[in-house]
Image (cartoon, rainbow, N blue to C red; front, side, top):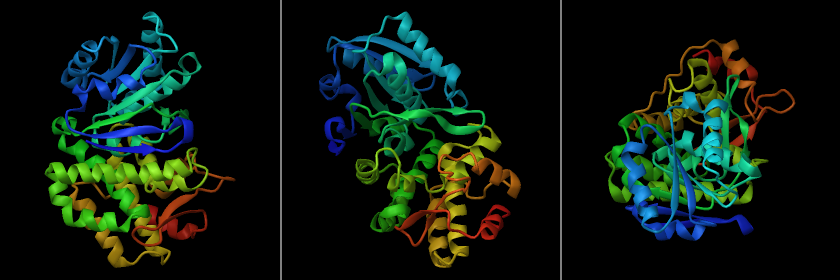
Length: 357
């Protein structure tokens, strides 16, 4: 097992990465205020891992309330959030009850937001079971729900007590979901870690084959990158926005197509190619670098051709992005592999050319 920390002074917390973590109560118990937890999961993950985690905790004397939600991005909304509140209230959960998010990014975001708001704040632990959630959404304290007009528009920054990334859970992950997670892994190489991007080019086949050593390293390096950024800019006032490379385009795709039609990582992959295309048009990224990005994401079996929504539709949806300032869409663009910038200083006509592809 590997451990790294998200350094946030009194709210710092560990990320554990390794195998068989669901069987290790000693990783969880120190982070509980009392031996009472509510495990929030979904109809897909519950049959696979709820009993295993529950057995581990029950044998350690922990009282457990299971909360099983429907699965999918389409359910990341206020109605599903209220199902969590209902279960917590019906089972007389208190401020000392710890919520455990057992699932992918949707479960993590829902559970985190419920924890941030139930009784004005209860502790929670992230146990991500998808690659995307292990390398990205479980780390950094972004929680929230979608609104019909925009993705993740309602939420809170609320840090977990700990993150347990058990790579054994990736063995049951559908290949499409795994590929979606690889998009977020590649993102770290593009925004700030050129050496990691080089490593991914060399090891992508082994990563896609779930080679244990390669997978563990990719998760650790991704979490390390995110932890460093979050420690410097927890509330996304500057540098942390770089972690949204491809997301402004990607969120527009998810919204237009209907949440869940495109997986988040798939939309981000297409969005990163759109960002690369615009960066090339701006003269910031070479044709060769764009080809390297395309080749790596192709080997990750990701869809890279964005749907043709029309320029005006894209622009309207991108105006709903959280990074919009003074009515201007701010984008994360590339100034080379491993170097990115958040900017509103781009040629709008060139953006329209990218959106028209």
